[in-house]
Image 1 (cartoon, helix red, strand yellow):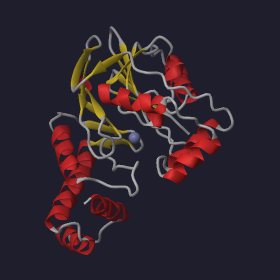
Image 2: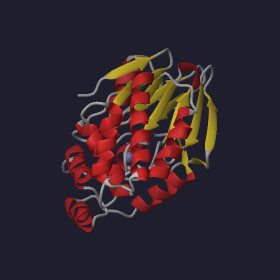
Image 3: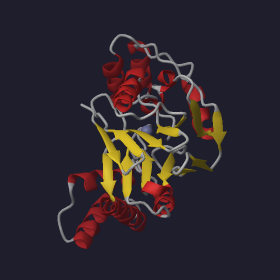
Image 4: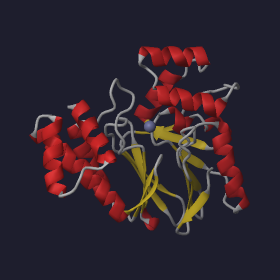
Amino acid sequence: MHSIKQIGKRFWYSTPISDTDRPVLGMVVGSGKALMIDAGNSESHANYFFKELQERGVPHPDIVILTHSHWDHIFGLPALGETLIVSSRETKEEMVKLQPLSWSDEAIDERVHKGIEIEFCAAAIKKEYLDERNISIVLPDVLFEERLEMNLGDVTCIIEKVGGSHASDSVVVYVKEEKILFLGDAIYCRMYAEKWHYKIDETLQLLDKLEAFDAETYILSHTGVLSKEEFQQETSMLRTIAHLTERYNGEKEKIVKKYKEQLQREVSEGEMDTIEQFVNGY
Ligand SMILES: [Zn+2]
C-alpha cells in the first residue's frame, strides 16, 4: 500500500508500489503555486494522491513536471485536468511515439515478443488496469531544452535534464529551500534493451551533474528516500564499478575480484547485479 509523507514544510510525496510499478509522486507547495512531480501510472494513481493531499489541505497542482517519458510516469496525466504540463522537448518526442500504440493484452504481448516492451512492465500494466484500458497519452503544454527554474512563491525548483543510461530524457527536480533532489529513475540502468545495462560514460557524466546539487535528501522513484550518506554510497558504488569496467575491459571475473579487494568484504547481490549491468553495457 501507498502512504503519504511530508519532508520539510513544502514537500509531500507518496511512496512507490512495486507490484503495479507505481512510482513516487511528489508535490512542492509554494505560497503562489503548487508543482507536482510526475503524473503516475494511471488516473487512479494520480487521483489517490490528490485525495490524500486534499485531506491534508494541500492544493491541486498548478503545474506538473515529467521526469521522463516512461509509461508509469505519464499515464496518470488525464486525471490532472487544467494543470499545466511541462517536460523536456525530448520527453515530449518520446511521448508522441507512444500515442498510436494499443494497450490491449494482445498488443502488449506482441511488443514484448518483439523485444520493444519489457515483460515486467507488461505485467504491471495488466495488473494496474485489469480489463479497463482507456489509456490516453496527453502531451505537454510547455517544453524546455536543458534547464528551467520555477519560483513557486518562497520556494524555488531547479529542473535540469541530466540524461543517463536509464533514459536519455531524464530530468531531475531540485527543491532548493528544502535541499531535496528528486531523481526520478535517472540513476537506474537501461531496461528498454535486450539486456539491462549501464554505459560507463553516460553514468559518470550523470553522477557529476547530480553531485553538483547541494542536497540532503534524495528521492528515487521506485526506491523511495535516501539520505545524503545513502546516496553517496550508491554513487560511490556506481563510480567504482564504472571505473573497474573500463580498466578491465568489461571482464566480469576481474572486476568482481578487484571490487572485492577494494571493499575488503564479499560483494552483495545488488552490487553483483550492477557489475553485470556494466558488463552488459560494455
Ligand atoms: Zn523509467
